Length: 112
Length: 110
Image 1 (tube, rainbow over the protein chains, first blue to last red):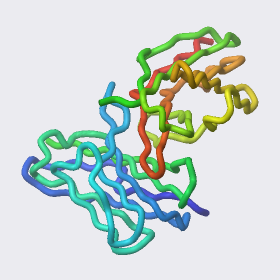
Image 2: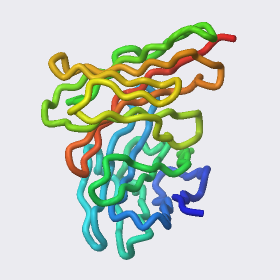
Image 3: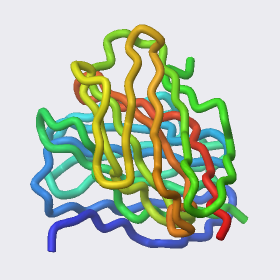
Image 4: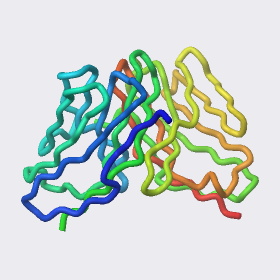
């Protein structure tokens, strides 16, 4: 069954703690993306990666970090430097040259 | 700077009637446009798309219209059903960069 798996679905974090959100795909897509959704603000791009060992900052990369050590995985770390981390985080993938993104089910991060 | 805009945060429609969701864009380099549907606490799912060389694309109850001169696209849902109640995002891309609107929350009233 091809798809994108995001984990955990829900995560609670204390202020000052780093947390890593997992995104795994078996679609063999080259490009992977992390978006953040806040009410009334749509989807905002955090980071994206087009190939292994390479990634680019999106519009709101401050306070976040990523790695792309293998094609299937693109974990996102929300660091303590991110001032407003409570949000719904979405991972997406895209095949090379394709015009459509496929999204995972999302991870809800709440900072207590 | 928002390159894709959805100016209506919400829309309510009676079941069986037409739903029209609107989207405007600013970048004339966009060559492909998409609509996604999203339920709460789930990821968006692809609904329908249109290439800039077309002005209409239809898939069942869903039709997307593109007016390039006005930099405007719209999604028509006919007839609307209660299961269509969701947030709809329009999006566009240049290469591997995708840009999303802020979404319109559609409520279909039974």
